[in-house]
Image (tube, rainbow, N blue to C red):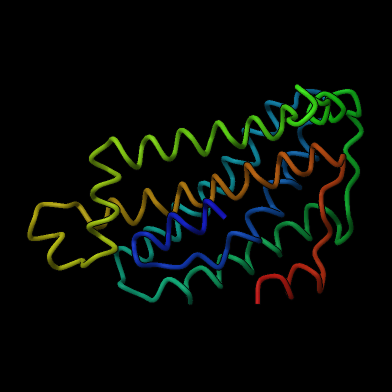
Length: 193
């Protein structure tokens, strides 16, 4: 939701978030058995690159972000299916999965606290930095933003990159937490519609 919300603030829409969610989980589950942080970095990194590419295309060509990110969504689902051999993949590091889900103070888990921490960081960056102001300005009007000195293309690229990374982070935490990366099938396609 945070990934999609950021793109909406700048007046765009990222249909690829569900694909990035699944791809991030699949990459992390496949590569993170021995080293969960490596899997997390790989999953988030791959989807950040996908977001970066989409952001560059939207910024440089002026194409509608829905068309560009629909293509990104299909690429991410195709990559997820290829990596996972078109089926769910189990994550065999049950100790780590258990640690992520272990209750903290009876209400939280490490996974939920990580998600809350990311949300707080994004809110602070959005509220207290020039980038947050520039994102709001970009969403309010590109021509006026450019006139005011906002580097609109940079904002577009960074926002789509962040969107891909945040979607993958959510997918990675979910994949690790339930010890399974999702298969690509009708359920994911329906959820994206």
